[in-house]
Length: 228
Ligand SMILES: [Mn+2]
Image (cartoon, rainbow, N blue to C red; front, side):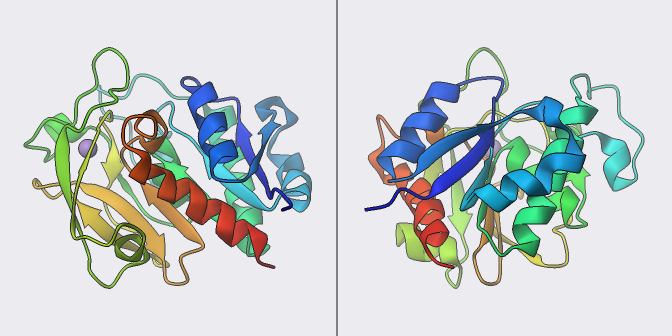
């Protein structure tokens, strides 16, 4: 069967895990150069069937109308601009977009939503953890909305996930909906009505080896990429 082409940037960490998950789900990973710039993003999307926006640096707070708080230290505006242009082009072309961690946050900002700049000081009351490496263990639970695409994927309303983030989605963009939250109310998954745009706050790419059920998220991206 033809492998749909799934584009992603050369992410900061666990690139091999992202590539492995896309391949295991039946897709063909295609690397996209950030240095090509936002002006070329739509030409790349023309060549792709789907898009994966991985984890990474904080999203620049100016992009959602806020001044950065002291806990925001790592930003890369060139990456923000390139990936936002990729997301816009993919949405325009009705190609699926899956965001992980920063990816979910950036999708939300691109479509008009806002972020919690620093979870520990702005509302998080359980550990969302950001020390050392991204864990491949399950560290908190999430509650999934029963009428969501995410629920259809996992078939349950409670999921245990790993966690490695200090930012999160605050107000969902107008075309997106919060479909999973942690026990302290922190947003853990979003999706569009038709399910073509979706994101999770945890890191499924680091869980697939030990907990294969998380490959379902990558399978969903690849399956949606086959249509059209
Ligand atoms: Mn979390």
